[in-house]
Image 1 (tube, rainbow, N blue to C red):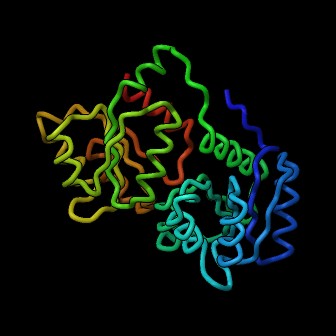
Image 2 (image 1 turned 180 degrees about the vertical axis):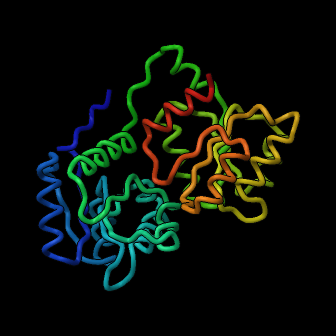
Length: 266
């Protein structure tokens, strides 16, 4: 059980529009948030984050001095802020605009306007990301501590985000590779019980990587979870048919990932 509550979270709300800021602030307060920091653009938000270390940053996509992608990349490049939870509230729905921020690792993307229930779910997901639940000595928890996972993603920030999520659910043996080719090399050196792979990668993408695994007598049995921001239906159908065990959108819910992993390991 988590000891951290919503009322203990400190939220940095970055919003250039005073009207939107007031609306979001009111909804957050209704959800149980009491501690707030405020900023209007990327520069001021980064300055506040460096000095106050918020638990969660909430912002729209666009500011007068950059985008949410610029802000989250700046946070991820600071070792003291690289694990800061981030939530996007935006009407933006274009893949090319959202892909980079999804790859950087965020807890949720909410539309404008958003449903209050979705906001609460996103805040609870933030709690799970910040503070892992206590792990008991049950057979399930013990099995998670004993498995080996290979994370394959060309984004270092995405690797860090996924690794933190895995650690939060009790997995400790985590290795990394930057693309499918490196993933195969890693597995040749030491097998894994589970592979978590991105789709869009250089050298060898996720689909080719999964196909190579499924055609290998040595690796074809390894379950593969594909975590992707891809929204192309044809590509995703191809991934499903290639033999993945689970397909997860970015951003993803930690509880869902844990449930899927346990299902695949069974």
